Image (cartoon, rainbow, N blue to C red; front, side, top):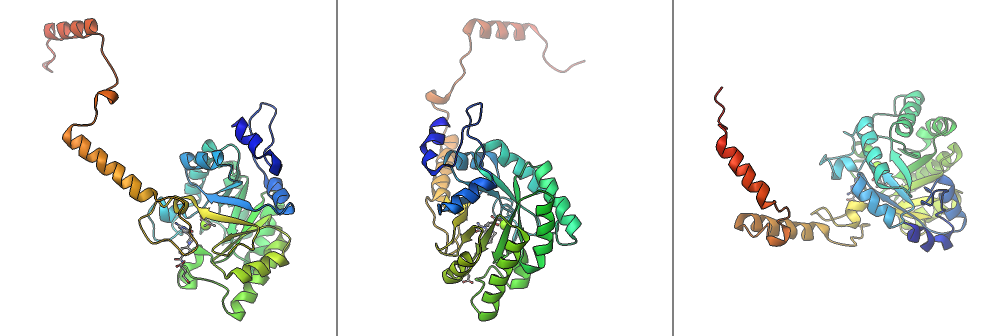
Length: 310
Ligand SMILES: Nc1nc(=O)c2c([nH]1)NC[C@@H]1CN(c3ccc(C(=O)N[C@@H](CCC(=O)O)C(=O)O)cc3)CN21
Ligand SMILES: CC(C)C(=O)C(=O)O
Ligand SMILES: [Mg+2]
């Protein structure tokens, strides 16, 4: 951990706290990276084991994304996820990661009714989940809500372009901003949420040049996913980076490994060895018993009536 802290000290990010551990990154760290024009790395994680890998890899921000509904929980979209589900997962991520800024998606249905509902949900994610910030999908229409959450003391990351929670309205998970009208709307959305006080914004599935236009016209970091590299940072779902799903990924996904295929081979191998008795082999038998104790146990049992005959 210490070594990891020092290794990236040149980027002036991780600091050592009084007890020697890496201090957790904050929204200020993200602001500093942006000012220094250092690209910001964000991954989505939903559990302690994945969050810990992100920690050791020195990822700047871990987003507990509602994509967990589609990938980890097997739903068709992100809309079934409840606020309590999100709290549960943020807590797990928190336990597995000590260094990244932790941001939680506000689930569909827990913020749209009123500003009060949205503030309450954001505060729940901070209070019960220990999230440091929340992410909320929406543009102009969400700006007053975002303002309220920020005023309540919860930093907000915006989310513009493809808003997966609105896939029923959009007609699928599709590229956004490729017409005059929708491109202008996206720029207006970005300006509105910037004005409302977001500390950063995700820009999803828009043409590279539109993402650049937005990035050049706002003064907070833009975190792209399917938005090219003229943005301030990138976000991907860790399961996509690792190739955990056995399906064709979205165009913007780079699979840095093919976990699914390798994991399948490993389990097939295990299955075969259990069936054949090859596992456990002598190297994995483990626990030996003291022969004197064993003999005493046998002797004891032979003297007892161990049938259930009361
Ligand atoms: N595993 C996973 N990764 C994600 O990035 C992700 C999720 N799940 N779930 C929530 C949202 C949904 N997202 C998605 C889902 C599908 C496409 C997709 O299939 N896009 C098409 C583009 C189609 C077009 O050209 O309009 C593609 O082929 O890339 C994109 C983003 C991004 N998020
Ligand atoms: C893909 C990212 C931006 C997200 O919102 C999620 O993982 O839910
Ligand atoms: Mg999401």
